[in-house]
Image (cartoon, rainbow, N blue to C red):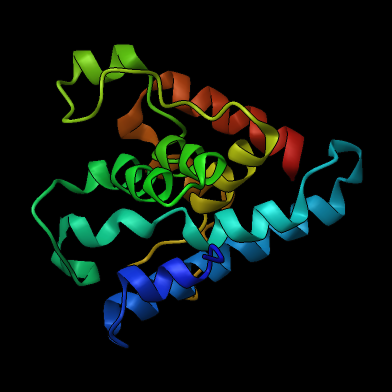
Length: 178
């Protein structure tokens, strides 16, 4: 199955949730491709960035976030690992890592334990350059306010709840990607 077919498989109805997923994914993918073009020295895999941008939030339908038309049972913070489970089951392990590691600016095992987050007990911090780019780009677009691009300061402010390490990662990405 082609990775994009997974959107129709898991979001078969043409509804607000599917449109939200597609619009947000396209915004993230577009910015990621812009960064890849602006920084050829990074050697980013453009095809993979496009796929990862579109699919990084595939797990949102399993979460309870009515403001963005999600009526699942899990807390929204779980959408990354839930999407990773979907992608792993479909044979897309590399894309699964993007899903799992894009929440906040990445979430460490220490943060998961300290905050008692309902997440698997492991580090979920972007490692590859492509994972970093998707995580970074995701911070500039909100599913609840489509078509609005956050400024770097607004994106940074949205990371405050994730702690100082996430802010430091974001700041480093700003220097690296902008």
